[in-house]
Image 1 (tube, rainbow, N blue to C red):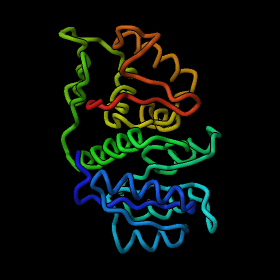
Image 2 (image 1 turned 120 degrees about the vertical axis):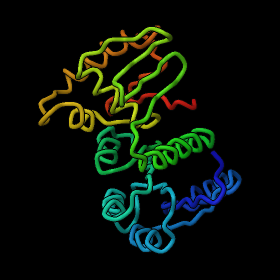
Image 3 (image 1 turned 180 degrees about the vertical axis):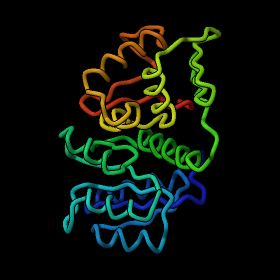
Image 4 (image 1 turned 90 degrees about the vertical axis):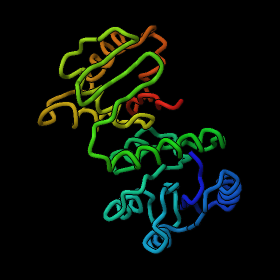
Length: 232
């Protein structure tokens, strides 16, 4: 996916990071707008309506999670959190507050651009009424028909196993927090982190050639799970 005509809003108070991101994103064909403070970012977002936001959590005037909350009141633009915070709780808090993904500083340009492409693709698909069909390598997940194929063989899943896989397929390429999976896959929030781990373990044994080294369903330690992007 080309960055042509897509606007990225970068919210970060570190000038070195802003220069780095401005150069990398401009080279990739994106239009770049910048803000160094949270309130300025919220005002800028109203006027420029960015296609995607790169948001640092450590801002001088307000917490990045407050900015995220403000954006989510009116904007559906994907948000990728950029953070130097290594604490898993901060990553989970960002995802639960509405972020689409996160990157821990320092990060490389190829990874950043890949995450941006995934977030933009997901945003484009989100408005479509039809349920997606996930295909990557030997794995095919047809959510509407509730069918899972590995190669040419149909894989039978329990209703809960399928619901977990469906949530991950709808968010392919993005990390999905444990809290989100528990909320979406279980009725009335009756699931537990332990039951989720067991079901993911079972899923891997059904869809992965090598469950110990999965190529589709990856764990984000302490945060959640990610079904790899179909385009990776």
